[in-house]
Amino acid sequence: MPMERDAHEALLTELLNPEIEHSRKTEILQLVRADYVGVQNDFSELEKSNIHFKKNNDDLLQSNSMLFRQAGMLGREEEKEEEIVQQEFSETVTIEQLERRR
Image 1 (cartoon, rainbow, N blue to C red):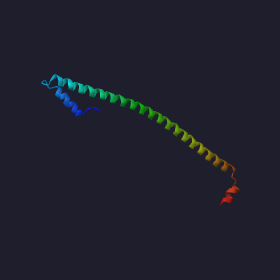
Image 2: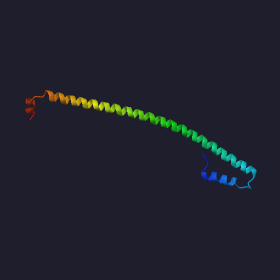
Image 3: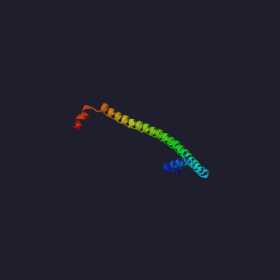
Image 4: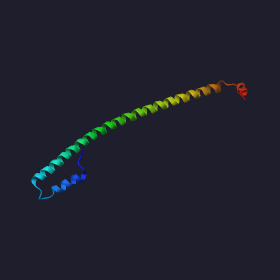
């Protein structure tokens, strides 16, 4: 886990002190280096995860699009079948049949 921003700033501020011992400067620089490496590793892992999630999202978008197209085609086919049944009835019905229904 990366160092807190305040802790990092405190180390850098301490490093600016001209009276600090050389061993302490070395220790601070090692801490900052270790933190930087950790941040780079975290960033790399997050970048890989982001790429993976984007690919999954693109795949899901494509699948959803295909499903919606299929659902739309099935809905149209059912509507066409209903229209055909309606047309057949209107073309075959006689006036006598309509009068009997009243």
